[in-house]
Image (cartoon, rainbow over all chains, first blue to last red):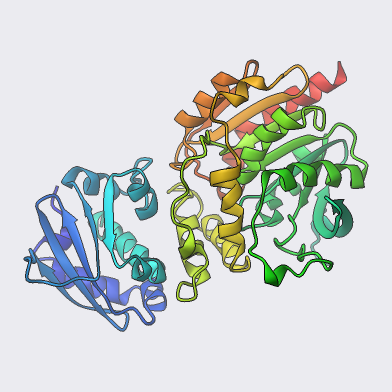
Length: 130
Length: 287
């Protein structure tokens, strides 16, 4: 599966679409964090400043810092990004509880910005299926 | 002419373990009392669709209380609750249900609860088997009193209620009406900061069915129905089926396309699963 937020030709569009989402704009107040998204062996670093995604950096290395991460296999993300995801892959909390995804780092930041974070993932799902 | 619902809200004073509570409840309909208990950190509003459903209220008097410390039921006046950590216990919940029914003079009511309310259905059947003619537990799962996850983020000065709103939205099933999925989250945004963590003490610790305790339930005294939404990852249909198999005579129903809040996230789908059970209980009650 081609993940749109990992496609070099798509990341500018993904960034713009999330930044233009009315709910993400509301939810993102005070949100300034770097989020590592791991998809199998690939990944990206999403940099958010004051509720705006300023950069999606593909294939970050160990030299990149981040505040927290979400990691899952390519298969797990494929299920998560379906328009109607199956049980245990439908949302971040459930996916992590069922060990289909791994969530780590600054957990206080995760929960403080949980609305913005999950809305970002939901928009990524919407874009994946457009 | 204003548009009114048939639902009436009022207060009743209930004494539990020597403390008087001013309890808000809503009711609608006539017939067999059906007491509906909400989930942790929410309130009776989760039952608004059942309260307004004519097919149900033709045979059932639907009654939905807000537990003390929830919704419009304030903390008790006689307790300096601000000096102690709020914690919901099994003993209180069991006694509350019995005393609430007694205060309203309900005759052989039916109990219906979701999540902590679903877990309480099983505890009532086990420990207060003569209080209800039947118990229906939604999303009760099968608690072996697992170690609770760190719950401090449920009551933390730098994490707002928005976290609970959004995490509960995530426990609904995708594809159900967005307006109702969001409404569930809204109620979670309105509980006082300590309530979620305190309620989950019962959910994770005090409700404990390890050691095959549920095998002690006698369904000749109280009928037991357990229902689980396909998308409920925390109280999965698989876990609930294991529990139902321990209770001789209990019936298990998996509800496709529903998550942790079946009565609120898509009532019409939930009703298709609930009505045969309510019919069965009503028929058995006539024997």
